[in-house]
Length: 176
Image 1: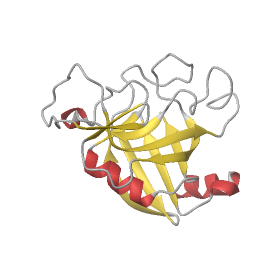
Image 2 (image 1 turned 120 degrees about the vertical axis):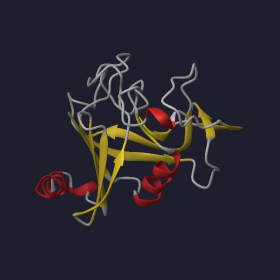
Image 3 (image 1 turned 90 degrees about the horizontal axis):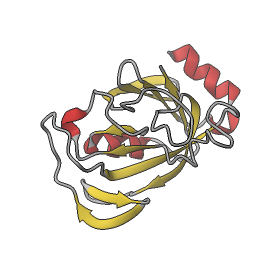
Image 4 (image 1 turned 90 degrees about the vertical axis):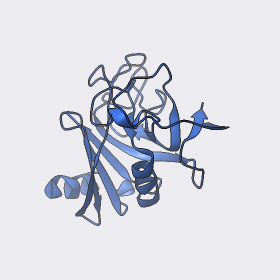
């Protein structure tokens, strides 16, 4: 994976900052690299509908992205965001492997934009316009299973770590 991270930074020099995240749908994991070195592995949840890029598909888009916006810095764990706005409410974190009627975006948001025209950037397939995020969830007991509606979910503590490690502009590669 180290060679792939180096190649990404070479291919996208405007986004060759200090951190790169690699998200694997088949492993339901995110690997964080800093300065080319593996830092940590996190469990995640991607789409229950699999991989895909079409608007309205609720699938997780593949390819090279970057962190376009970071939202929620300093907010308490469990803060609920709706339309990227703080609702001033806290979610009750569910640690059992239980699906709830809600689909809360909690704690932190890293809003992704695609870098590959025709793959994850452009009309009808644009990751940024589809509101694809790395974010916290109140359904922490489901982390490690594909259950989201397209985003990359993490536990709230883990998304705070990623949020603090990554800067706007840092690369995120999403693979099968």
